[in-house]
Length: 193
Image 1: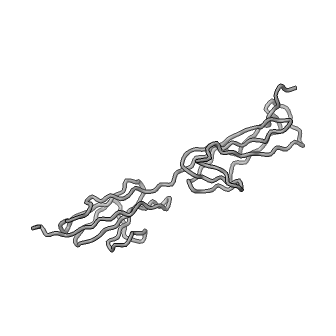
Image 2: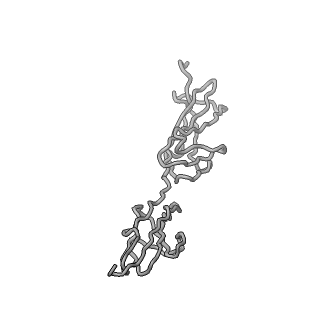
Image 3: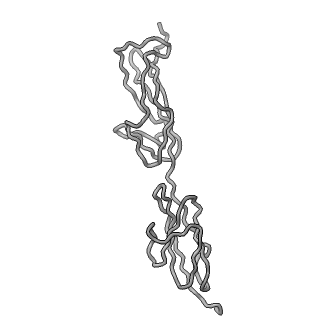
């Protein structure tokens, strides 16, 4: 006889999974839980015994379940998912857990001009850079906000020979994210001014 009720052993097909913030992992792609034929005391569990499984996120701000049982990855970090059997009159709740590593979405930093605009002489070299590794800078000189279809700069400079307004944005392709657009107005002055 038991002084306390036994619990079934719960096993998982994986102990770690990962994904990108903002994504949803469908229920069918989550680790599969199986219940062993023995309880935690080593006694056989009758074959006609069935258990309902309950999935709980211990870090719902990072990853949590939707109403259909899919796992929604909400924010960068590590979450623990607990899989447990629902307790019955004969058995306590058996538990197992797995971790979910959620990679955050990267939004690139706003580009920085080596010369912030203003009055410059013709031939002034201007560099636009971004501190976010892996980002690409796109710019326009026609007053329109830049897109990935416009000219791009990757750690190189351009020459200011006319009065222009330059608008630049950094783009991080892996997450399809953009920085804020930053502009600089350049006015050409003669060497004598």
